[in-house]
Image (cartoon, rainbow, N blue to C red; front, side):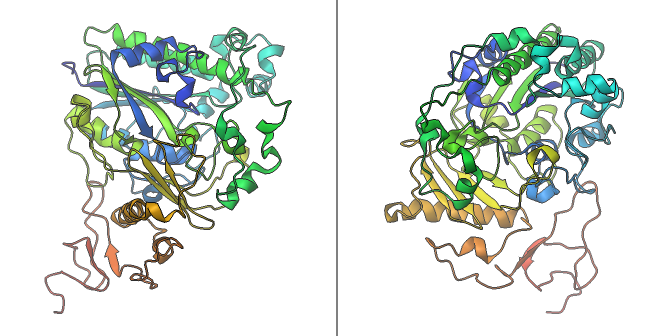
Length: 504
């Protein structure tokens, strides 16, 4: 680690792992991220907490699962009593700055243009700030994909380029400070605006038809078939082609802008630590689905993660976005807040042979943003142990996949009795995590599944347990309901009190 405590956190939006050369796709032109992977640690089993923009970001920038911080849907905003890691680190004497897409303020897709507590207002630059710099005509053009061909879109007209400019400026001006800098690119998320030369790289490239693009969905949850709609088995048609030249071109453009930030960081006498990831992926017709939504298929939850600053190699253990906040605090030597719900992977960073997570957990709530069509409530919870992935779909049917033998998730094993031990183990892990994290949607209905009849807790009070937040740095100790006195045991049987004057 450098003498000064410095971390540059870079993220993209809607970037699958197979959109990077360093993850094995030789057709992708991503030289800067490929170089970062060669110089750092590449995580091959990294997962988002939820494959939607705000929920994914809420876990990264609060250290809490989306269900815990009110980030379980787009456009909801965060709970007032959940400080961001920017505020926490700033209060610990670290200069924090955020450049780029935020999507956590409860506004529309572009944000409210307001700098949250803790972050440097001089560098705050969400998408509303960018649009405010443009004329109405420029706003329209920059949101239309056809503008790539119709108009001469230059680098300096794009959001990504202006974000990179600000990031480079920060790195150069604050080289002598302890800092945490976030550079959050909207690219390659639609409308995929970038200079035409990047799109032309992929003008003749066609994405191969994978096996799971022909999935009949017969053993999959009903809502997946509904989601597929008119796109059902489209990849089986003779005239099907998938040539997302704009999407992939914008992906390469994002790599170029990321490279500018990486170069600025590496040019410092003591180069800062660099962490790179993406919020989620895109289905691109896998299982006849497009975009992202209420599913935990690999195409949307399996994300890239690279950390440079400690050595080189590949980490094969499951890690999650929920691990990033405590890891960052470890890097800065700042005590990890009790409210964080993930473990630091600092030991794993130092030694990839160490496994910090037995499971990584994922979820889905709902959409709530204009371009997503205001999708309905579809609650699900999932767990992955490095081989098996279980998904509980509360309103439809559940899923179990063996990613070692079935990496494309074609065969749902949930009703196979020979996997009973695996099912019970993963089911228990999901339930325990829901209770440990105060999941507001927990209840007996997650326990009692058709393939695992748990009736012990089938009551309105579920496990007959109450759980309050532990003493937290930004709010007073919660008070015991029965006594009005500060609690001493946050987790206890319902109705029980351990306060000093409670009745025995």
